[in-house]
Image (tube, rainbow, N blue to C red; front, side, top):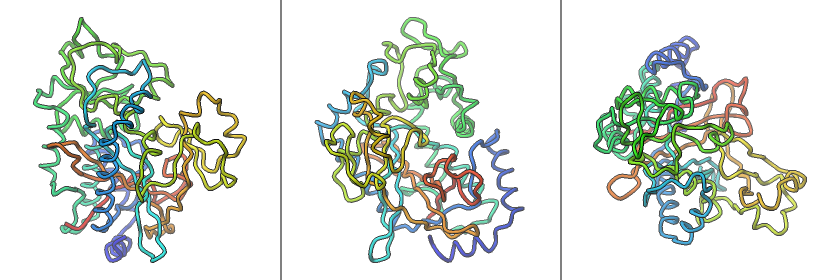
Length: 392
């Protein structure tokens, strides 16, 4: 989206360089990266990035200042996931934006979703490094936000995850972590912070304490996605509801408290019309202009673009509060690639620090399918996960 940088990159790109990039990425991660990484990074204009950063902070502020929202969101947490000791604020926040074209021709961000759950904070730095090193990007570019560099970024991430504890007292908790598509992020997190990667089945409770590999666990960097836990009927070595001596780096309640449930509550220019399905007395006639989404799912699971009345009628009345109907946005292609114009979705990553949300990095996904997920972009090139760079 910065034309001279885009043209220069496309001119210098070769299949040999891309193959070298993928090889170097796997070697540096210490494992094969299971998801597709695009042939190109993305060059983001500073003013557009600043707008997205501001919008994400404004959206969270709307919710934080609305006690009715917190009461309603609290009520959505299922009984089996009412984890003691919820925090006043989320430690990690992600705000995802697509781009539309305004009548004057300029680009503007529109919210896709917002979540209070960690993203790939460690891997994303490695991804940017490999683009930079392989393709010899300009020294004037950086992937970091908020005035950070690599050292200050990992200092902040370590502060958030460790909270002063020794790394051997902190675990990254997941379901079968070494078989997850995001395993590369777990490896890179371990490289930088020294914490252990733990499967939820292998963490054991003894009285009010948790142990992993014979060592007491005092803090958990939580990467367990609730809908996967339920869908696969995973039985962990402890119950999330237990009264135990543990700190959470990313309290599990924020999976519910800041999620698609938030979307109908926002009043902001960047949020498309969104309503709970249970609140709609008469469905719009133009359902093809809407998207039906389950509240609690990841990676686009269950999303229905342009649902039919029959699709909606199949949802029982007592389940309709678990779905939203959102007006579809016409996200425009903005990246010029040899395979044609490509759309992007930009995730602004924040860490709660010193009383506020600090922007730290971006995750960018590109695609030419109906959605950005892998399943919607099969057999395409110049799509997938990528890194965003801005001019320093």
